[in-house]
Image (cartoon, rainbow, N blue to C red):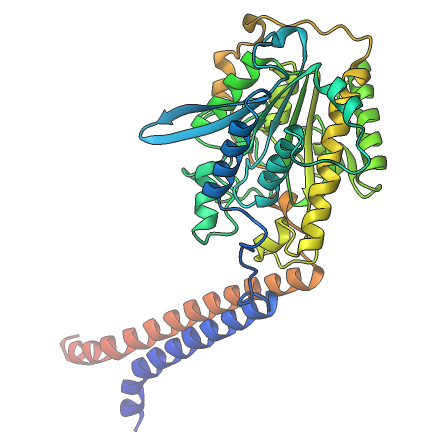
Amino acid sequence: MARPLRSLLPSLCLAFFFFFFFFFTFFDCFLVAAQDPDNNRLTPINRDLYHSSVDLMKEIEAVVHRHSDKLTIETMKSRNKGYVVEMPVVTYRHGRNNIDDISKFRILLSFGQHGRELITTELALRILLILSEELFLPHMDRASLNNTLNKLVIKVVPMENLNGRRLVEGGDLCERRNGRGVDLNRNWSVDWGKKEKDYDPYEENPGLSPFSEPETQIMRKLALTFDPHIWVNVHSGMEALFMPYDHKNTTPDGEIAQQMKLLLEELNNLHCHHRCMIGSGGGSVGYLAHGTATDFMFDKARVPMSFTFEIYGDAAASSNDCFKMFNPTDPATFNRVLGDWSAAFFTIFKLGPGYLGEIKLHRKGNLDKLVSIDEYLEGYLIERSSRYGKKREVFELGLQEMRTYFRLFLLSSVLLMFMFCSRISKNKFTKPLVSALSPLR
């Protein structure tokens, strides 16, 4: 009776293995569903509120055409091994014949660096509509505004990451990278190459080298040739007014840094209703980010006032519900965000030159701003993925730990079963051989 039972053991082992496999699959799916109960109810793009990338650019081109006395548009192009980038840049200046940018106060604004942050590109359109006087801010003194704008040249990049935006519109609502899978806000040279402990190589890929991407090459060229006094990189995911630095837990020294902070406090008071976090990007949110555009603008391009604005975030949204997390989904919030932040930018246009005040600002020659080859050879990066999403709750972390321990338990059980079955198989096939050889001894 023992031998028939022993002959069944390999089959029993195999059945036991499949039982564990299917039980694990079911249990893992259960934990995923428990961790994100809204996984099957992700918020789609609200087409009633948001333009497609094609429609947005058509609308911007139409605005420029209607106001050619104030607005011009050019398309900057670059490529890398067949990957082609076309980036529209809109310039505002009073009078087409007045092209003396050197004597004027220069402002450079970038929107849509991450594809999933659609609200930022809508803000770019809103600002252009106000600059063209097709829309007006409440309580805006038009005479005072025009007097301010006469002294400015403003360049607006309404959609820095067009190829990444197309991926989002194709259904990948969490995509922040460009069309080659590189995070454009990790592809700049300042402190490029350093990784945080929770580095996510999928979401936070910094590229093969600093400025490996055509988008960052275009933006670098634009910054060095235009030589702005103010740079603002506009994002969503939270409400914040950041100044340098992102890659270290400190702000710059000197009078410029004090003026930057005073301006941000003014914006927080007037337009953010004291909701916005203020300070360095690296120090304010508890982690460091390396290879960012704003750190390059301040440290290498020598832009006196360099900022990163985070204009919206839904902390209650599921971590997988990216459209809701990064973009307002109802008309009231949508219009409030655009109203508050467009007003904030016009406050910058009005107060920015005054905050720089007595500080002497001379246009620096391009030789002063050339980036050394060493900066192209510096290491690897990535910031914490939670920067543009909400922090996971304790319950979520508990479920993640349960999944990890369960997988370890399954792996150890399978290994033990394999060892047990191997031992049985060894005994089954070796004992008859020993019996057959024993008479020869």
